Image 1 (cartoon, helix red, strand yellow):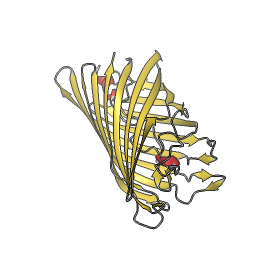
Image 2 (cartoon, helix red, strand yellow; image 1 turned 45 degrees about the vertical axis):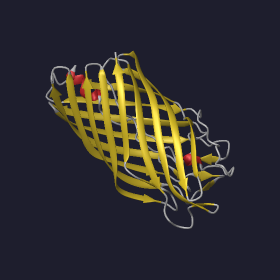
Image 3 (cartoon, helix red, strand yellow; image 1 turned 90 degrees about the vertical axis):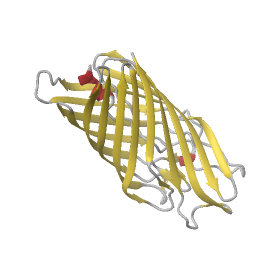
Amino acid sequence: MMRNLFIAVSFFIFSNAWACDICGCSSGGLSGGLFPQFQNNLLGLRYSPTVFSHPQNPGNFNGLSKLSKDSYHDSEVFFRWFPKKNLQLWINVPYKIRIREESLRTTQIQGIGDIQISGLYTFLRRDSSHYTFSHLVLGGGGISLPTGKYQQRDETLTMLPVGFQVGTGSWSAFVNALYMIRLKQWGFIAQGDFRTYSENERSFKKGNLSGFQGSFFKQFQIGSKTGLFIHAGLRNELLEMDVDFGSRKTDSGSFSNWATFTADIFMGSALMSFQAQFPVYSQYNGNQPLPGNRFSLSLAWLW
């Protein structure tokens, strides 16, 4: 059980985009979370707060009101089910709160975001009980449905930026792959992911997102039914420019590097995960609000 559970608390397989519209960022926050690969169903909750700071330049005004910061409070219910031994299906239902602080007003919107359905297949699993090293290869993908509101307005009836909305108005599709190698209590995980969006009814298309990350981890045994997993690594994200009415938006697109840290603990059938990402290097085009540190807390129950 312990040998399988370390994969249960690996990190981040389902990525969210960080595309930024001018004066508003897209659904930012941590991707993924608890990642069970043992043969159990899973039900959990996740909370991810993030703060974006607007540059202090003439481009960041809403009329006469100067933009200050955007606060994102993203929560999510996630469920995993194994219909077959090597196939796992996921559904993620997000609920999002957005708060924008300006010099003349504060705006808050909230609601259900874009629901995501996905699947992953285990192509290779080599057990360390028969080999010196254990290996794992996973791959899959999924879609996000345009279930979230994306045309909400502030008190002046000005349409809020697409990136600030709780939904996108778009379908999106993504693929991802993961490779893990482990020797006793130590291991390394490499992961790649790619997401693309359809054009919504307002002729807006969010930029494609490509990501890659690597992480070293170590397992610590605490008693007979409790274990701790520590991950540390680096994530790279390349975000292409958004397209609005057929033209690329100059205030969109980015390249960023993030230092990642994860602490996961399981106690019997309960799992808890704390995740953090810290910006190392970033390049954002135009007048985009800049993200701060990214955090996430997940709680889950398996059976």
